[in-house]
Length: 118
Image (cartoon, rainbow, N blue to C red):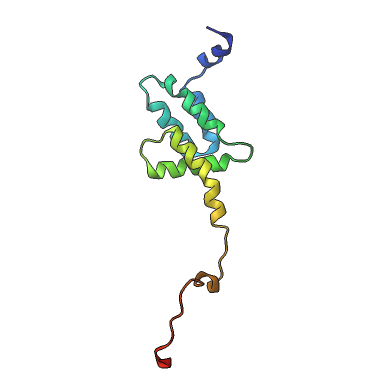
């Protein structure tokens, strides 16, 4: 076996679960689901590793929110769905930052003349 592949022999399910635990319970649940998805758990290692590499510095909470959102929507989460939700969480938070005053919220309502003036 090549030397760069020998590190993977030492990995097991417990190691991935231990890596996921600091992110939060939802991330741990998704990792467990990814590992249980395959008859041979080693087949899920790449998905787990990719999932745990998604967050950059200071984005750990974002991964937890993405995993929780995926768990709320699906009984069988997968890496692609978590990745998509993770990437789109930024757009969700920026869209709620827009503050609209009450006068602006009805700016496009057409004012009809009052019946008295007819």
